[in-house]
Image (cartoon, rainbow, N blue to C red; front, side, top):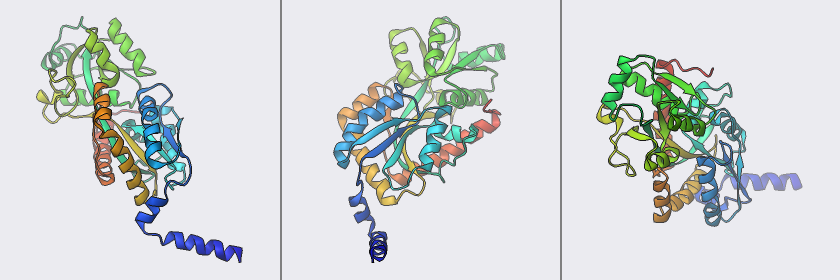
Length: 319
């Protein structure tokens, strides 16, 4: 009798319409998995949003860090999590390149469920003030005059900063060397010190150095000029069609019910569209993106094609 009652209950829940499923979620504390170590921009953003998310969903939101392999370790763990929506993740654009380069196998669209594109962050092409260039055409001319002599740093192979540099090399037809570091902080420190001369740095971490004058901003990698650096041109003004951003997004495990994904999407959207939250993100170099679950799914498919082409054409390998 107990078994029949249990089966009847399960059968009835399977017949619940999508709105009822969304209203029943969440039924217990939520796990927000961050695919980067503590203290980084993604972790800080997740911990700032978690209390607001908890207030909107009526359950505690516990942030857990699963860093390593440019986000691949955390993304693979997220892909293995139960798909009921009680575990979801805060990721960056490296969720795409990590899937293409890492031995930790997962398919970004098959094994993960898009929830929301939270914000987009342009990379800033910065140079040490000692480098005698102030524009993208001047940098291209110098790189062509000294093939293989200019070196750009990044937080590691496959990072969005690395992908930006490789895309620039392909679009401009120049030969520059890539110097991968263990994190963006050490790479930026070496550009400031003059050990490296340039970098396509993440705006959130690079802006303070630009504002204090220790680095010179040459251009941004976004399709148009950034609201927080309106005087700095986009690379696309010299190389038409050039556009690549870093981004922050929310993903769930593959197979997450659409009603649950929509509920999470609505809760996050309600937070990031608040004027104070939008202004705080913009101050750090991030522009709120937003949109629907389906918008994010289409965006991720486009990113897979774009980044995959760079990985292939630049012959990027994990080692």
